[in-house]
Image (cartoon, rainbow, N blue to C red):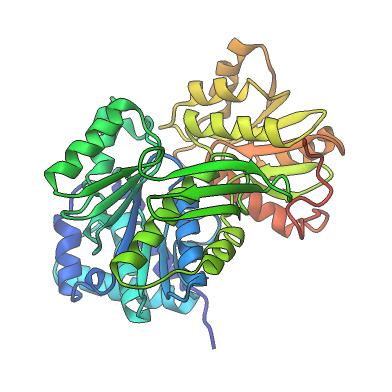
Length: 448
C-alpha cells in the first residue's frame, strides 16, 4: 500500500533550500562516490540553455519512449508536486519512493559528513532512481548554467544547447559570452553538441569549447534545419525536419508556439544521433507519435476556456517576448488580462515592458515564495507605461476577478514565474466551477 511522503522527509529536504546555491562539484561527487556512482549506469542526453530546456527534454523523452526505450527524465523546478522532477517513462516518483530516496541520501551525507545543497540532493535522488529502474537512457535538464551544475556529472556524450540569453547573471556572468561559456561547458570530450540558432558571439563560444574537447558541434540552420508549415490541424504546428541524411515532412507538434519548432528539431537531432551511435533505429512512426503526443505543463498551456485561461512559465524577457508573439498570432480575443508574479532576482522591468506590448490590464500577485517580488514595486514599474493595473496578492482571488472581467471572448494569461503558474494551476484544477479542457483547443477563439 502506498504511503504519503513523510512530512519529516519533506521538511528536511526543503530545509536545504535556505543554504542557497553553491556552484561546485566536490561535495556531490563525494556523495555519489559513496553511493556507487549511480550516474554512470546509463547514458544521458544533457540539456542546457536559458529557455526551452523543459520542452526540449519533453520532446526527447517522448520520442525515445515511443521508440521503446526506458527513459529517465529529470527536470526542475516542479510545477505542483515534487515527484514531477524525477520520472521514468513519464511516471513520476511515488510518495513512497520519494521518502525512501530522501532517507538514503540523507544517511549517506551524514555518514561521510558531506553536506550538499537542495538541488544537489535532488540530483542524487534522480541518479539513484534511474539506476534502480534500469533506464536505457536519461534526459537531464541542467539546473543552472552547466559547467559547475550538479547534473554535469552525468554519463553521456550528447549535449543540447537551447536559446542563450541573460538570466542568473549574479552566478553566470553579465555578458552573453560569459553565460554561453557556462552553458556550453556541458559539452563532453569527444562528444556531440546540437545547438539552436544563436548569435555570432555565442556560436564562437560553443565552437571554441567543442574544438578544445575534440567534440563535434552541429548548429540549427547549418547542419540540420526545421521549417514551419501550416498544418491541417491549426493551431498545432507542423514542421519539416532535415539533417544530412534524412528529411521528415509534416511532423505534427502538440506544443503551442512557433518557438517549439527549434526545440523539437534539437530533440530529434539528439535522438537520431544516439540511435546512430548505438546501432539502433528509431522508426519514423515513433518520431511522429513522439512529437505529436509530447506534453509539457505550464508552457503555453491552455487550461480552460470561456474565458481562455493560458499558463506560461516565462520568467525572463526573451521568454516573455516569444510568448507574446505566440499569443498574438494564435488567438483572437477582445481583452487580455495578465496575472503576473515575478521573483526578486529576475529582470522585472524588462519582463513587464515586454508584457505591456499586448496586455490590456495587469493583476499583480505575490506567489508563496520568499523570493517573490513585492507586487507594489511591480505596480510602480508599470506606471511608466500608462497601463491599467491593480494589486491582488492572493492568486486564487486574482484568477476569480480576471475570469469575471475577461468575459467569454477574453484571455487570462498567468505568467512571470513557474511558482506563479504552479499555484494558479493547483487552484484551477481543484476549482469545481473551472471548465478544464479535455482538448486544449475546445471552444477557443483562434486566428487562422
